[in-house]
Length: 337
Image 1 (cartoon, one colour):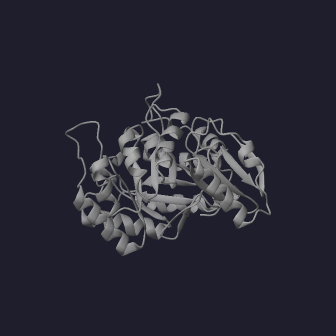
Image 2 (image 1 turned 30 degrees about the vertical axis):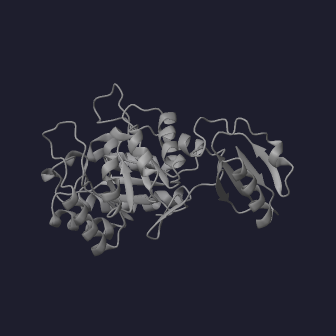
Image 3 (image 1 turned 30 degrees about the horizontal axis):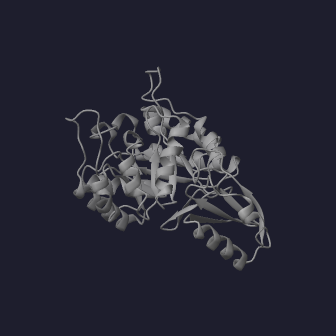
């Protein structure tokens, strides 16, 4: 349920509504737009009458949320959520590009990659310190050493870092290093992990599961939001279909659908969505044209030597060329890069 305040509602009017909500043992979430403030009511509101708030001073209307995902829905918050990370705004008019290697392999590799993507215009450095792999014999990441190297790369370039956390026990540790916590596709429905990141005040990048529906993605986001962490970024990274030529099938439809259903920022991952470096650029452009708020792109100094996902990683010079093309495309759709 949400309480929509009138354009001229005073701070005292809003505070009285908040106190009234809290008197029922329910939580509140405040969304402030250019003209209106919306008081979101958190918890079980099935027994709550709309008239309880409709008669209050400054209230314009009271609306029940019909979606199963409440806080994530655009009904709950009509205004786009914008998440700021070290001066980088995700979800605003500017497109945000997260770039870097699939995994941190060495100090020289991550520093070279970080400087290269920074020079090309990337806003955030990506890199895995912990890597969930299909085979137990594949490289699983450097762990704490990888986190330390990412922090060093941030210090050297000024780029915020996004990296994956794989278990509830690791959340506190990864929070010490990361600016954005990534929940990978395989963990999208790891509810204990979602609850754990919902308890911290760090932005969370939530990737769509390999065979998950859009509603299931939004319900997973709801777990994080329900815990009190309202800084969630949704990521379309491709789903598993009958097609075998590409690694996954990147669901372009999901981007405008998510923007319609939810206020949360949405980014596209054409690297995992295709699995082929030569397809990354055209699919990245498709994501931008479809309305994505940003992109996550794998870039490696020497893809042929990469310890993971080399086939879908761009060389720095190809990434730089793509950034130039995206600048023109962004302008064409009313965005900036």
